[in-house]
Length: 98
Image 1 (tube, rainbow, N blue to C red):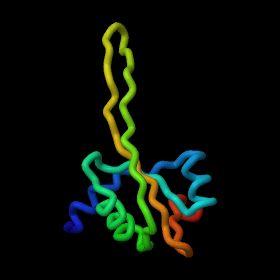
Image 2 (cartoon, rainbow, N blue to C red):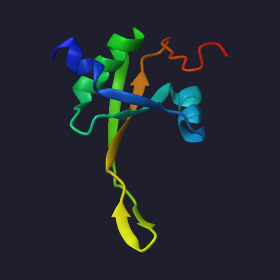
Image 3 (cartoon, helix red, strand yellow):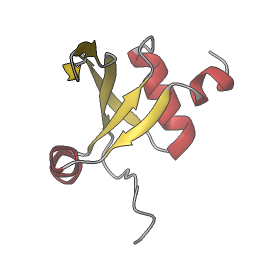
Image 4 (tube, rainbow, N blue to C red):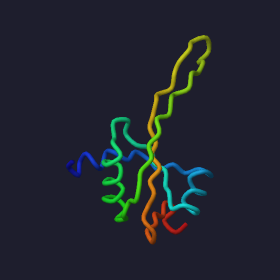
């Protein structure tokens, strides 16, 4: 795996009540990731971008919702999210100290 591929694996952090609670209690952080990313790629990408040690990765496929736009039916895209558990003593700060 080259660094260019690893830089494109993580798309965005997931910031919600559930992920912030998981970060505080269990040292887990949520990310929106590429749909073809593997657990090993996700772990290496987090280690590369945030200079932390990853303990484990859990991946979920989220199905897109069916929506109506007037009389037309549409479907949102499917996407993938990953919960990354860090080793003890490591932390990621998304807020930048705000």
